[in-house]
Image (cartoon, rainbow, N blue to C red; front, side, top):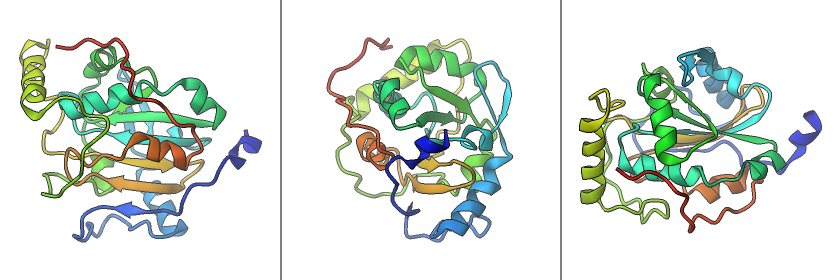
Length: 234
């Protein structure tokens, strides 16, 4: 495995958040040492898989590089459509670059399987129901008013997207928001070991990173997101 780690190097650690200072408890990953301390601060925190099994977050990237996408909540139509595009990334592309793709949500683990069926997502996925990892990484609650540009991954407008989200909430077996609606997400490139190569904390629901721009950083070839897989729209 070590030989494969000589894949294309990623850019230095970057923190892309608002101009406001991060909480004092969250190290600013402006260099390798501080990046390692930030990863170490979350490595021993648990996440849950679709069966409710506890897994240490650090175990997910201890032996490999990982692109880790934290989503807002599973009812968010923007997150749903973004993950639908993550689902289009061929596993062979990731294997060639020796990279794994992981989605982290913040709902109960019971919502993982229905969300995967809805989006067609078959890569790794876990939840952080207490949002402890979100908090320690300094991810925002609430939305910053900022122009995020047109996302290539979002197809619905706010009206139709919100109606679909509400419909899924009221027709689901458990009536909840599948996570804190005010929580924002982000994207990281981690590992192997306690290394953070890249971190982007979303300022608002539309501030996620274009997927191909992240894949390029880890040497994964370009993906065509124009063809849509068969997914269930409700």
